[in-house]
Length: 79
Length: 420
Image (cartoon, rainbow over all chains, first blue to last red):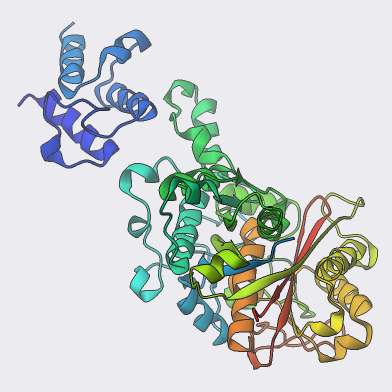
C-alpha cells in the first residue's frame, strides 16, 4: 500500500472511530463507515491538513470512498 | 394540574460520577475542590476549582470513553459530554425504555447550561484570529450551543417529545427542572429528562469570573478551604464542573409501570430582581419572592419544610442576604429548619448547580440526612437556622426547598416532597 493510502486509512480510522479492517478502498464514508455529511466535511479538512493540499468544495463533493480520497491526493501530489 | 415525580437521577460532579458514590462522599464531608490541574492557571488570581475526578465508573470516577464514543467526543464540548453522563445515568436509573413511537412522542428533554461550550468557542476564536477560519471544525457550532445537550440526549435515547433548554446563568438547573415539571403537569409530555450541565473550568471561564470579582482568590494554598459559605473568611465562590439530570415523570404513568418514586415536585417559584446585572437586591428581595412563590404554588407553608439546600455560593454579599431572606420568609419556623450549602464540597457548578442540588435534596429526603456545610468555622452572621456546619445531620425530612439565583437578577426555588 502506498504511503498516501496508509495515511488516509489512519485518518479515517481516527476520525470515524471505525475498525481498521472496514476501511477498504471501496468503502463509502457515508454508506459503509457511518459518517454523516458533517463528518465528511471534517474528513476532507483532515486530509488537507495532513497532506498540505487544497481540496476545493466541488472536488470534495466527489470524494465519497476511501479510494476517491487516495486517488485525489496522489494526483494532487504528483502535479 | 397533573402530579410530577422523580423516578431516576444521574450526577457527574467534582465528588465523582454516580448518585450513590457522590452522595456518600458528600455526607462523609469529603471535598471535591483542588488545585487547578486541567490547564495552566499560574497567570490567574484564582487557582482552585472543582474538577472531575479521574477513575472508572465502577470506582465513582470519570473516564470519558465509558460514556461517549471516540467519534462523538469531538462533536461535543465538555459540557455536553458531562451532560450525556448524567442523562445516561438518569435514564438507566429510571428503568424506563420506550416501547412504541407514542412513548417517544411523550418523552422530552430540558437540560440547560449557564454558559455552553466556552472552551470550544475559545479554541475556535484562536483559529480565526490566526487567519485559519477555513480550518474551523464543522462541529464547532453544534459543539458550543447550549441546547445541544438536550439535542444529543434526545438522539441517543430516541426521545421525540419537547426538546428545550434553559439558560439562566446559575439558576439554570432549577429553571430547567421546574419548567420541565410544568410541561408534564400541563400535559405536554409524560416524561422529561431535566437538569443542567457546565464545563467552564477553563482559562477563559476562570479569568472571566475573576474579572467580575466573583471567585475566591485567598485560598490558593488551601483549596479545600476555599468554598466556605457563610463563614466570616469567605472571599468568593469556587467554580466546579459537571452535570445533574433528573428523570421526571407524571405520577400515574410512574405508578402504572411500578417505577420507584424518589420524590414529588411539590412547588416551584420564580422572580426577577430588576436591580443589578450581578449583585442581588437589598435583603435579597428576589430570593424572598421566589421562595414565597414556590410555597404558594405547592400550597405549603414554611413550617412544612425541614431542609433547605441554599444557593450559598460563598460570596461575601450573597450568602448573608439569602440567609436574611430565608429568615424573613420563615419567621418562627426558621428555628426548626436546617439549611446547608453543598457548594462547600462541590464548588459552584453554575448552570448545573441547581440540578446536582436537586439530586442532593431528593437524597436528603430519601435517607433523612442533611448534608453538611464544610468550612463553616465561624459564621459572619448569627442565625437561629442550623447551617449544618462540618458534619451531616440525621433528620426527618419530608419537604426540601432548593434555591438557585443567577446573574441578571434571576431567581428560582423548587420544592421536593417525599412521595406518599
